Length: 359
Image (cartoon, rainbow, N blue to C red; front, side, top):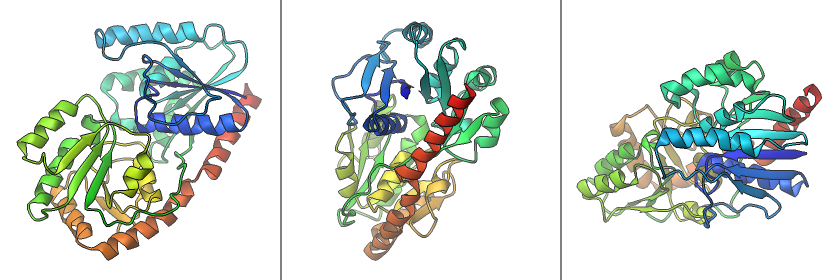
């Protein structure tokens, strides 16, 4: 079997890229031919460990050079050029909104089975993408959603739509001790992830809690403005931002609480990974994702969207109750087992088989 993943930048430390690396490694270990096509330029730093049998190819569209619309047009032609000589049957998975749309534009006559993999919520895209989805999603052989919530909307665009959640790839041998006074948040620093809200919560929290610190891991277009906000709120001695790391498991194990204030999500890998390391988790109950993972009051807390006061209250409660942190952490490690690879990859295998029969 030949599987190709089309991603924006395989070296970027986001959830879609993490899922791509995990799936690529899984199918390479099974002996399948696996390629990753990264739209962006090469980067010498690999955030994720990728099996040496996986071929990584680059389309060399510099994400920071030139006008955005020019880059997007160049991406369309680069993808078409890259796949023009495909001779063998290939499953092409477009990971995320923009790679999905690029994949959908490939000619239907090629021996490529095109699968669109939505990694954010259906409602999180800009208006132009709503229009393009209506036009282009019917060109996919299948569309995959992370949650049942979005499935009815996707089925209207492509009747061959399915739900396959992300899988977790590790359950730490030993859970976090939950003794370090560290609150952790990981992800792309952009508007959707709500780091401005995170700092608002933490600022209120710091008024009564003097020794806990917040650790943010990630990068993105709003990094500078978030750094400025940290300075303005006089939190520089309490908040640190570091780049994405391949040693991410240790980051979870060194923390005691995972905090997420996203405005929108798909099915966030960070919550699954946090639970696998035995961290209690707090999150706003944004439209998709957190409610599929967190059992409110059992392994974490789901907070009504943008309720800063309630989030601050629950964060303080967990920070000041080590026994509750340990209880929630134990429950989290039990809950996350339903996202283990075996049942998830069985769903992918069944989809690949069905599409091969129908091709």
